[in-house]
Image 1 (spheres, helix red, strand yellow):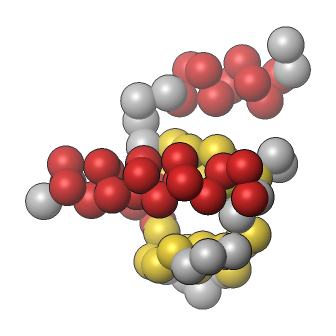
Image 2 (tube, rainbow, N blue to C red):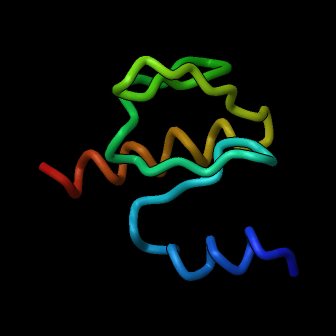
Image 3 (cartoon, rainbow, N blue to C red):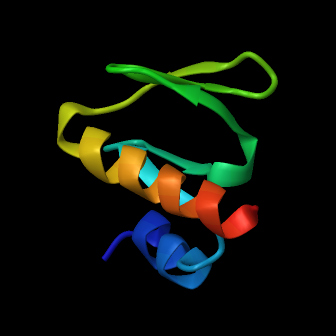
Length: 68
């Protein structure tokens, strides 16, 4: 198991989601999501891997609903 995988297991349940093979983000900093990328609140545009699109959308919706 890689160091990144170990770190992400520790952060599980704290709002972090994997959006790409190489990217994890904290849901609280996502400004918007479209079909192939997401934009963080600082304007950073990150790609969403095809394999991660559905789980990214679902995780963000759950985060937003729980944060209200």
